[in-house]
Length: 303
View 1 (cartoon, rainbow, N blue to C red):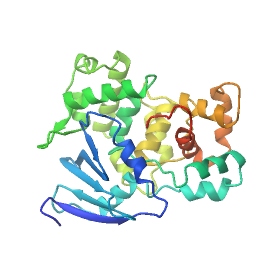
View 2: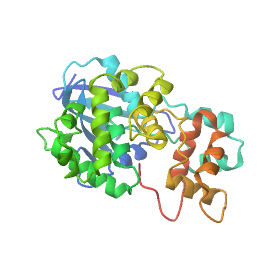
View 3: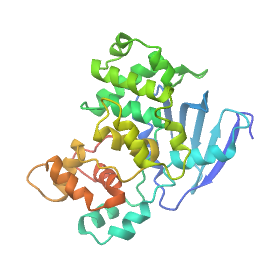
């Protein structure tokens, strides 16, 4: 316990890439909901319904100090949350063991050893980001997300805003959401998503507290929401739950990088990409993440 709330120190694997986590949380240069300074990250979030500030300090090699500005939380639940947030429960070694002899994958593993997928602060936040980011650039999605958070998020005393909860979205009109830069169809999808979470049709947080996360049930639930297609489902599973077997074959950057990896004259189509990723079974989305991260003339921004 500290004056600021509760602190936990977690030991990190020797290959842990904390710079990936910092880069993920530094996407928004205006730092509305996240701030990164040196080896430190601050994230405004709702912890079990309470707006609070999470601080992650990576300055001591081999570990991270996590501080939550709320006293006496359920430390078992907090530890589970932090391990998921930092990608520590992801079976990244399984890819190397099962497919490390694959010529292309061996190259990717050498280029980005220890790659994990940093997680959004909540599955609902991951889901909103996935919907916002459909068919637009990362920069455009960041701008829309920022406006949504400023308009509907919960402010903290330090000026940061927590990502809005489902009830905040349901309290907004379609015009309110459109004024944030959302298309009519995306605004409608976010409202349907929020309704499903509020009614417990989509128990996103319950699924997140389950080990392992029930990927099939999550995918089925998400698929029932109009406007959430295969790419969005796989992205939510990846960034919201650390599920590594979704197929990101519809992702433009994944296809471009695969074309470069295989020395193809142009980016392959979705069918080719889906078939190529399928050979990696439970690690399809992790392979896609390695494609995102592979060295290229133009670095992919963190989705």
